[in-house]
Image 1 (cartoon, rainbow, N blue to C red):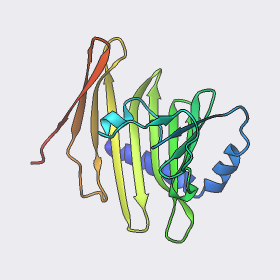
Image 2: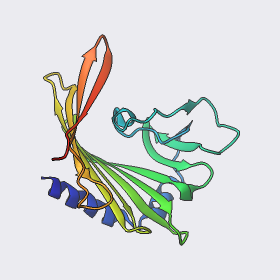
Image 3: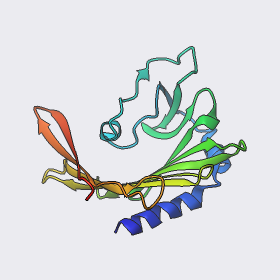
Length: 201
């Protein structure tokens, strides 16, 4: 199963690998957009930062005077569709594409030759109204490395997340990641996430 997920995300990566200019043109003239400034990219699925054990983005009420460390996020009808580094789009530009039963996030950056190349892809697959799985893939041609992860979701009867199981590899296919399990608990309106990683034998 994980092999098919890997093949799917690589196919998406290859499909969009040279699409930066086309995607940029599509987002240049969007009307009635909303702009949010933050110190990191906004999450594209629930609990993204908690699952990766990272601090949540800081949101600014107005445009910061300094562009250093600032991400510009553009939304249409409350849906994020484009984010980029305020100092230099070449340091990171993300396009979010909503399709039937899936959402794709494409993150481009400038390579050593100054070309905008695709470096990361998220693919969020839905089953009805809930997330079935999330695929993540990153590739760095400058150092010939690739990383792949898949998060598989299971749910409680009320469709709240119960468990996420994460598998994949880091930098190269032979470096298999130990399976990590995230378990959700709901206490007095709060969401608690517990993480357990299986040890390699």
